[in-house]
Length: 363
Ligand SMILES: Cc1ncc(C[n+]2csc(CCOP(=O)(O)OP(=O)(O)O)c2C)c(N)n1
Image 1: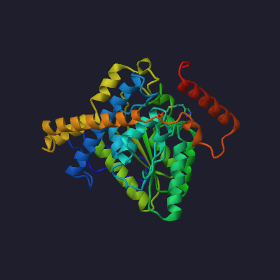
Image 2: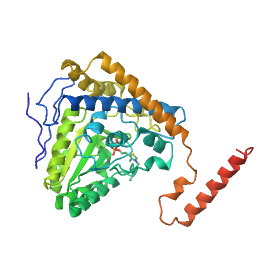
Image 3: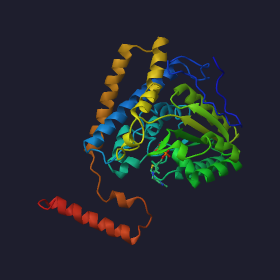
């Protein structure tokens, strides 16, 4: 049995693992992670998996515009949030709507977003930025939030989510540099799922992502991203360091998305079924399930009840999202303080088309 993972000022390259794929502890449970917490993590991961597979099916039925699935990455999505405080900021990408839900965004909001409904990004009371489609820009936003927290003395931590591909962007490096120089309370949480759309990791970086922290004076930790306990331990330690004024941490979580990059992608063109199968053997949900059952914390009856509950919850969220019909002009109304002429022009056109549709017979 190894020792508990520690965030250090040096780069740790061997991924930390606390729970093996067979569901056995490889390190002592980190402080604060008791039986109740482990069950909570499990329940969240199951809920997120159910949501993700339903959302994929909705897209295939033409009920969502497009969708970026995260199945396989649930340990990252859940355990990067649960150790945080409610007032800590998260800065997600388009694949981190799981993390957003764990932080308090209703399921229906996420569906609304992917249906093209601007109100899906209306997130009052939840300390999350809206989904970022531009790659790595949210790393700078997280640093800005962390800087503001420092100046105001709020004690908040900001978490920037990004993938391996994002580390090719200047914004990632600028954010790391600023965070390093000013020792900001920020966590750079990289979900290295081995591909940036179809570009494999080897074409993205010549050095392990975790090693990049050293150049910016940022602490680093590499974890098995399919191990909920390791991710929980890493994030809770990084958050504690941040709150203690010890500065930023880069966490590289090694994980895998089972599905396509988005529903517009065909992953069979760039990776093998065998590769997917191998990652499925390290699945975060199965892993924690095995552990919980072994510990007598979970059984078939609790599983059945959870599956039923989650099914109903997702169905209710779908019904809610589909019952709402936002104005077609909403997409123009909340980006600019004063919209440029071409946006105003487009808005007029959309409005005119919508009116024709309402009149019937022309649509
Ligand atoms: C600034 C910018 N450039 C390019 C794109 C197009 N794009 C969308 S997703 C993506 C790959 C991102 O890969 P990664 O950061 O590894 O995240 P993942 O999707 O694997 O979670 C790219 C290049 C974009 N959205 N924004």
